[in-house]
Image (cartoon, rainbow, N blue to C red; front, side):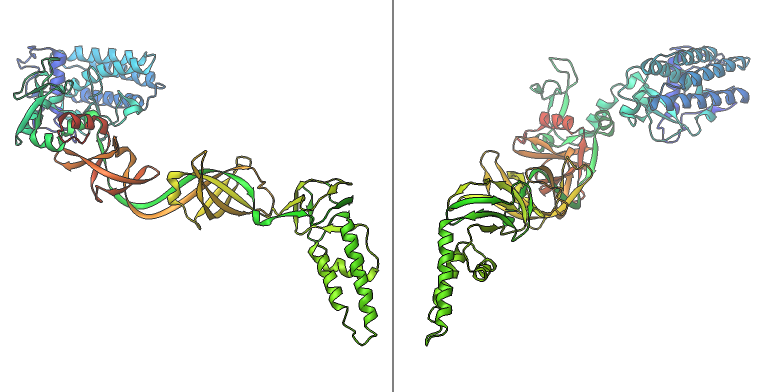
Length: 581
């Protein structure tokens, strides 16, 4: 007859044997005796189970594990089938019971079978988990009857679950069937303190142990911080046990927190480390003309437009292409003056001063040039020998007509803008950047441009200029990015998204979740080891993804709290006299 003793430890499960013995005691009831005269809750249990019955219970535990994995994955499908099979196995086990079974053995099997049937008929996960808790209670008590059933299994307890909160599983890492995917890793190894009602104050006693080496400054209530007493006791307002506060905690804000309390409030830590920091600045931009490629067509004399050759906005024109013909009395007189000078030059060639009229020709030619008549037009005029009524006015650049202010017959005056022509093979993107991001941006940085009208298409360029002033209305600064536009997909006045990737090299960073805001201060909790958590003021720089750059206050390798830090901060405020908060 085999025996399960107190010194047997289930792998990675803490004092699991003691836990299941207590569960068995709870199932049997206080003061009940076994048939052999031993106490049901004693330190050792004689098995007395035949091998076939142990194998049947082993099969039941395997089926129990299938049910547990479904609940841990929040899956109700298939649970009814597995639970029904489990109920059949447990009822079959009753038929294999020995002649003199342990007291309440049959009752435990019946309760386990009923719990399995309830789980099979559950309409939702909540009902299934309630039945699973009852099933776990009875199976853990049954497993205490034979040491071989403990092999390769681990026991866990969920501090977030009301009622019976324990379960067993083969894996050493908890997969919580009561909380499912919402808190799948919530669970601590089950030990006696977790199940023995007499040990309900174990955590509080452990807290006093941690503080034993320190001088106690005062005792206070976590719900009513205004309560401060020099002796331990209960809160006069809510009757909760008072919490000790050491002088060190009061002066520095350092708090002591054991592993169990960390598990209860979900405290996690992460290291402070050096890593490459890339800051991404997102801005809204607008496609604009490259103003170096804009040209206006104006006249320096008055006149009338006779024939309009380029009469459509958006039309492409080439350099030297005729835009319109113009009649101008001033130009007509200048042509006659030029032709008269040429006649005088020819007449002077047969005299003793053959070059006496050359300066007149050059002066007349220069006058025509100053009125934007091209040299080839002047040469053609000299060949023809007659002034032109309609002077052709040509385009000064190659590009697209973006503005047209004339029609045939229009009377024009000197200085009026008749056409505006733009080259669109290269455009500007003018991005509006927030004032706080401007110090990070400088000329030469890489930029990526995307447009909502062209999904999946991006354009790459560089920052060519950062404007030295802000827009007063939006309080943003403008940044210019130059892009090639050979296919003319980028059209002026389109909106664009601009992403500037700024590489800041290797920097010390801390997770965003670790940083707490306390007015103008930025604080983190540093894990000093041995359960000590210390609030530390830091200076942060730019944010890069899920991390802040650390400018001062931390060193590489420091461990900081990243989860549960608001609850830790509340306790630190309660105990601190530093004024940090």
